[in-house]
Amino acid sequence: MKRYLKLYVYFLRFSFSKAMEFRVDFTFKIVMDILYYTVNILFFKVLFLHTPLLAGWTEEQMMIFVSSYILVDAISMTVLSSNLWWLPFHINRGDLDYHLIRPVSPLFFLSLREFSASSFMNLLIAIGIFAYSLLSYSQDISAWNVLLLILLLINGTLIYYCCQMLMILPVFWTQSTKGFMDLFYSMGIAMERPDKIFKGWLRIVFTIFLPFALIASFPVRLFIEAFHWPTFFHLTAVSVSLWIIMLYFWRRGLRTYSSASS
Amino acid sequence: MIQVKDLKKNFTSHVKEPGLKGSIKSLFSRETRTKEALKSVNLEIQQGEIIGLIGANGAGKTTLIKILAGIVHPTSGEASVMGFVPWERSNEYRRQMALIMGQKNQVWWDLPALDSFILLKEIYQIPDAQYKYNVEFLAETLMVKDQLKTQVRKLSLGERMKIELMAALLHNPKVIFLDEPTIGLDISAQKAVRVFLRQYQKEFKPITILTSHYMEDIKELCPRIVIIKEGEFVYDGSLKNVQRMMGDEKVLSVTTQEKTFKVNVPRMELAKKTHQIFEENEVLDLNIHDPSIEDIIESIMRSGVTPT
Image 1 (cartoon, helix red, strand yellow):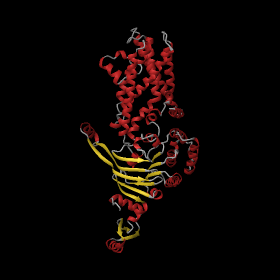
Image 2 (cartoon, each protein chain N blue to C red; image 1 turned 90 degrees about the vertical axis):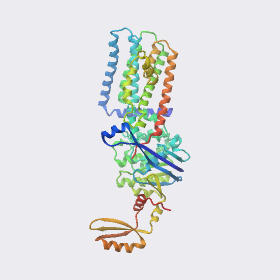
Image 3 (cartoon, rainbow over the protein chains, first blue to last red; image 1 turned 180 degrees about the vertical axis):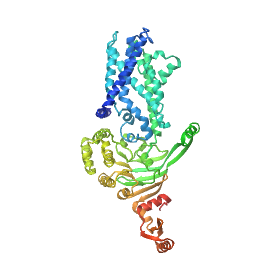
Image 4 (cartoon, each protein chain N blue to C red; image 1 turned 60 degrees about the vertical axis):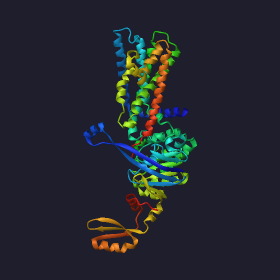
């Protein structure tokens, strides 16, 4: 564990020294993401001009939800996205070779190697928005509750990661260029909606099979509504199974990996 | 020690006709083709030994190396490298093994070599003293001391290959797989790599499997060679024996007005054959010499003579 932390510190160091070289990229990314945040916040602000409650939430509660998924998005953008973007290319071109021979988890290496330093500012902004939405909340909140919310959002980031990986891993068999990433991007919007709006089979899909509703909506519901054990168990059970399934397909994928070569 | 028994590897791929029409057709019905990359090979290599693996493109060299390095799972058969099953990929095995591929990079492109090395030190948990000694020793023998702090992408191909070698050997591996380490290098860089490898082998005595298309590499480094043809070993023995195998043959190199050609002739028929050539052609030049190792290996690869 300590060794992996140490390795991650090196990843950070390398990424920052690399990012300093590309300043245009830096500013461009900041502008893009601030735009994305503003649009998301405004969207709900406009809705609340017409109604006092949405999916059972007031405006300030909704802002906690919006800032929560913005935070999850910012974390995964900074920590994971450029790694996952390249993963299908690496698999297809046979670039996993050197990762497989090292005495260190190849999944760790391939998922976390590139820390996107140019998104780092955005992560700070997202943390700011998140903190602001909590501080301006009119009800009493305990420190424990805040801690739980943060932990569940980190878990949400892991769910987001697993869903994305499950769309990428078919590349091992199909040798396509992106796997089902387009499906992921079009479904991903489900994470930006309160889970209460999903009914019937759609609810089953988004809370169990592609559990986007568990990324931010469930954690926020546990935070602003009374703590509800069944919801918590549901969240834990799906998260753990998703992780196990992802690892299973990763291992199966490596078995079929044929390493395109010279 | 490496032991390989009845190792087989099949690759299946889809056959697609060219063009859009072919693509559409392949959506509905797909023909799959199975290629036997390795057909039941056997091999035994002792600690400290270095062998040359020779074969044409696609003969199965790289497949064998990738299986032994644990990257690719075999279809069937057994292999044990120092007691480990390579494709189980235990950390203990991986800590003692190194793979260098002339066509793929392992050091980080955008970073100076030293940064990649520090990362490797952490990955392999190389003790400080050993790390310091190895960087010093390797940089010295490979003559790349001044290049360690330059971003790798700014280095020449030859310098980059030396950095790759350093990166792969920092943790003192006991088994080394070298897949075409001299590919694309100029003569002097090739020579430098060879000299280094020989010195390294002498000093650390690892098991080494080397593949190369340059016979110079093989001749200078490998007392024992394995020739692989279409997934099968057609020769496994000493390099010297290969030469002796065709010891009673001579080669005639002939140049006429129209063409240049070579004929292998048993020594006993030399006079007769030479005479015949002079009669049938307008000969400008004729040389009689022993077959070179290159010629012998090429003829084995072509005809697949299995020597006794």
